[in-house]
Amino acid sequence: MAEAEVEVEKRKILTGDSIGVQKVYAKYKKEVLLKEHAKAWNKLSIDQSKYKVEELEEENAQLQEEMTKQGNTLEYKYEQMARRNDQLENQVQDMMRQLKDFMDSQKK
Image 1 (cartoon, helix red, strand yellow):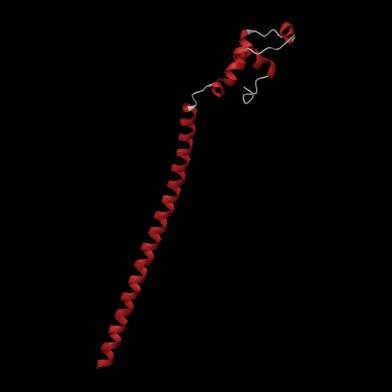
Image 2 (cartoon, one colour):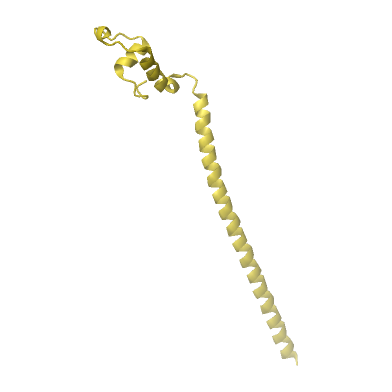
């Protein structure tokens, strides 16, 4: 309840703790106490699995987004490498033709 910022006096009333003589002066409407209880409800629940699932789903979405970005980057790098490989192959073929032409010219 402290995490939910429920006032100490209201927290004690909601949990059944004694507030001493304040009990005479502290008269809260049920609606007010209900609102305070509602603020702390998800913090009071023993079974936090629902909230863990939500946290994990959010983390999963972030990881998926990051992987997509990295995947796109890898695909781009792969395409760059493939283009560079094609360029190098063309250069090698040109050099081989030039070497063949040179060799043929030396035979004559």
